[in-house]
Length: 171
Image (tube, rainbow, N blue to C red; front, side, top):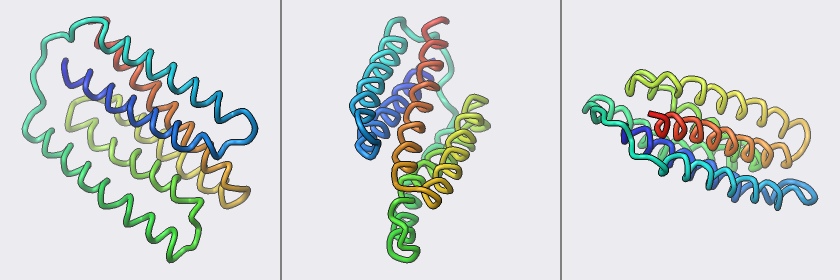
């Protein structure tokens, strides 16, 4: 299905961006290693998605597309609004990236039903769980926990994208 390929690529781009942007907050040589691993994982997803033509399938329903665009719009509003509250009201700027991971995770949850794709449920909940754990660790330790949360979120997105790309290619 073409939608699976597109979804895998969107997830892979998002995962790579999470890693490239946030790896700099990791200590020592980890930023370089994380970025190299992220780029390699992205290349793997690209290869898995593009190596074979997709299987024929029905395009998403109007209802599914409506759900998609509502979730994306909510994400576009929630990220800067929440970041503003976190930075200006709570004065906890290190938590901003955990908020972004939380919103990205939550936006996947309605997709499972809308697209009849159960894979979105574990993806969404894993990201939400990472965000909550990362936020708690950030408050308890340092901003390194927030950077690690974002890098792990990127790895999760790339991993799920690789699985989606592999399934599409295997059909």
